[in-house]
Image: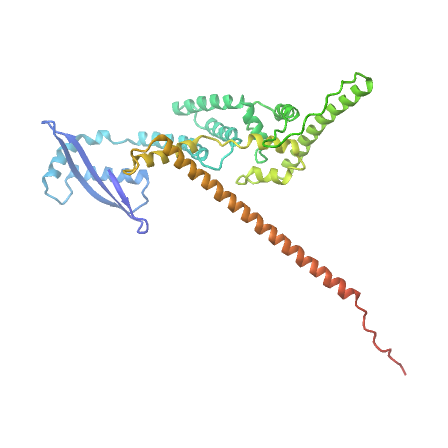
Length: 373
């Protein structure tokens, strides 16, 4: 069975064929009928349309005397037992309603602009959804068991905990980490920020200064302890200020978390460096699957079916580098336009201030004194 949907006419046409193998082991095909569906092409309406086709064939109400309709009549005598009952339809609808959020989560994870910080939040929403369903159904119990197992496995990943913390859309939300408290995540963040180092690439480093003998005096030990305490206190102050900022005004869900850190990198230098480390990873490896699809399109072409793997790699790599170059040019042009606009605004405001100062410095005209009689 297949159909044609009118894009603008709001009408659909469906045709039903039956394929079978006869007693002589020959494959046969019979058309059962064609019918128009005027309502919405939903699964329920299409199923009712096919059921009506079968029932009309069984009652012989088709106005046709073709031989294949007669054979179809014999074929469809016992077809009713294969149709879904009302209880089976209800079970199918329940199954679709339970599994739809999981399918939506997979589709969301396969998008190109995703972040690893969304994984734990996605599992938290699915786990809360499945716990609210009827636990007497086998499919619900199975989904709940598997969702909780994978959710807890992901919660044991420190990388995901760090990424969800530096995402201002989800940080300090209650109920998204199961039995893990945000204080535990803060201790993990503190340990990472206090031990991480900045690595510079392609920079000529100066020769290291001659190491001096470490002093063991009381003064040196005192200063060193204060330095360490100042570093830990600065990290703790960033965490406190970050919590207050996020709880007072959280960015919208459809916003990019990197925009927040571009605006607050000076205020939170350690946390912004952490965000730079952990927010680069997407939710899934769907980009690799898309690349494989492109490779399949190249190989399946009649002109490229003998292409070597090295040639394919060069073609795809050059295309990717070209895309990176175009994105870089667009970003540079946008930055130059914004800088030109800011310069024009500054010139305009400066000229306005000069005009105001000139007008204020001019001597006011003195009117003649008025005489009164």
